[in-house]
Amino acid sequence: MQTLEFRPGRARVMFGMAALVFTLLVFAVIGLACLKADPAPSYAGFALSLAIFAFFLWGLLRVIRRLRDPKAQLILDDEGVTDRTMPTPKFLWQSILAAQVIQTRRFGVPMMTLVRLDVTDEQERLDRLSSKDRRLVAMNRSMGYGTFFVNLTSLPIRGEDFFRLMNERRAQQSLPALIDGIRTVPVELTR
Image 1 (cartoon, rainbow, N blue to C red):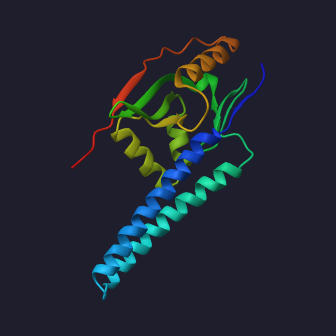
Image 2: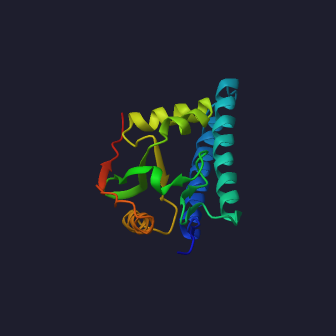
């Protein structure tokens, strides 16, 4: 079977960039209003404003880099699944034990689509990760997302379709089909 490659949908990435620019402008207006209200601003407030500005500028540069990247983010081939956003090697079909599509929603609006992967070589993959990535995995586990997952949020494929494609590829390898449980996770705003 042919290799399937998925790149971020241009419209979705542009929407993300527009949201970042809008947020950056909101913080800039708030910062200017604070400066105007207090003609002798504190250095701590200036440092905080600069840090916020740098964070959103970093995000904007990442989005632009992602738009210009010609490589596919997600690849399905006869051997397995490759997700270039993850610092782990290809997930081979025979190493995937289970998968679950997780859709997060806020106020009924879809936010993220993830496919959780349970794999046989989990500890080996964890050992290859940096300490920062291991902390990220621990945070993902604490939120119920599992150890490894594929993020489909900006890709032009639905979770159900990706799951179906995974099962088709597994069938070619004479592997049993994965049983899916599509789970919707409401994201609550914290106070």
